Length: 578
Image (cartoon, rainbow, N blue to C red; front, side, top):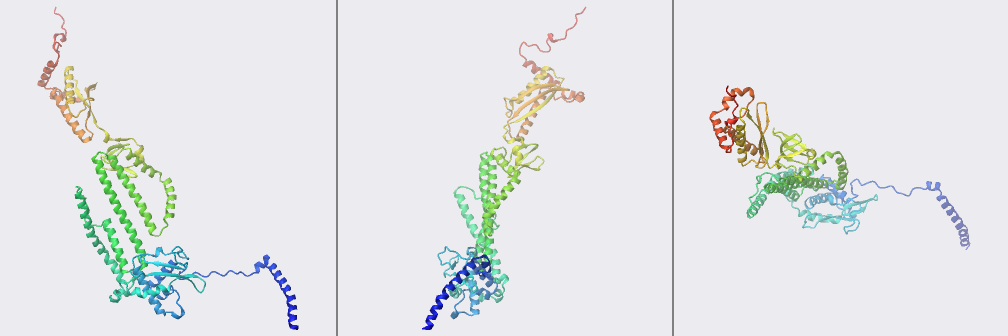
């Protein structure tokens, strides 16, 4: 009884005292010095996992690398820890690792880029947050998939492991693999020798199948060509001219790449190497696609150009050629972007960089854009086209090409001159294609020993030649005496020849000049030569019989009643005889 009373009294006095001490201690802890002396409650962060199991991607890639390098004990550490009662032996775990590697290599496509790199995995796949399911990209009759689970290890880290549920299916699926029995029958050195962690027999199969893949394309291409020829004949068109079927083209390259890719997948080469191999195949397929597309655009542009040339629309043909080049350049940019995306480059950042870089390049390449726009304006205005004879500034030649940057002229000396399109667009351009006629202007000199009537007669004979010639424009020709020169009468022959090609003009002018020469000879005279040689050639050019015939013709051509030069009134006066 006394003990009970003493305990009650002790409790009554001790409780308020303890409460006061706690309050005082709480007040003291609120001060800054007390907070500084309070030890930190934050625990240090655990070190990162040396095997890279923080993400599903890291777990799969780490397992594949370890198993491929034959570090099967390390590869088994990516497995979910087994229960103590059912813990398999290390040899069994290593055997499971090798079998799982074979299954992944033969049943899974290039899946590494699709596996989540987030420590939490994919949260939108309908699975619990700590589970990740990796399915084969190809049809697998066994329905095998890899289930990853996220568990906490002894250091408190959340790591991803290959689940025991998946490992339980490995032996059954491994027995159904295609090459599990084949490797047992092959010579040991082909299986045991593993350059770059891949069996030697697989390397040999990959190399030997390259020519086989090319030969497999030939019957397919042959059949495609025959069907195309039949379709052309039904339309009444001749079959197109093609290169020999054994030559490598874009179609053959694409088919060979597809055959080889399927073969590599079929033999079950390492998934890690197949991931890089797939990227190489994609790049080569894009190259073949661009190669084939440029051929298609070239053929289409050639057909359109032939039709436009047949209809005389040459300028539109040059525009088609320029449009084809711009289209090929655009396709090339798209192919390069796709290749960069295939290689893992961030295309969005690349496009942003291209935008900023394009602005800088645009400021520094103003002349290039000026030439590009100049070429477009030349073709759109129909100022020039391929095949035109023209004069650009002081350069004369035939247009051989109108490119994105320059126009190329073939000069009469057979040299090739490149003129920037910006210069062509602003230069004085003389295009000979648009002329419908060519001017022929000649100066003919007749000797001073001709009488006036004889001179008129010679001029009339020349006019008859021009008036009768079918290639001389009848409304604009003229034959006029211009001046009294030092040693002859100068006669101007001015006529437009109805030819637009210069070679045809020269032939017609030659024929006209020969006929004028004949007309002058039939008029009983000739062309004057310098006076120093006049005495020597007088007898050569004066022909009495033609002079007499010309006088008779002049008498007949004179109107009746008009006195001739021998009329008495024209005779010189004589003084009367005394």
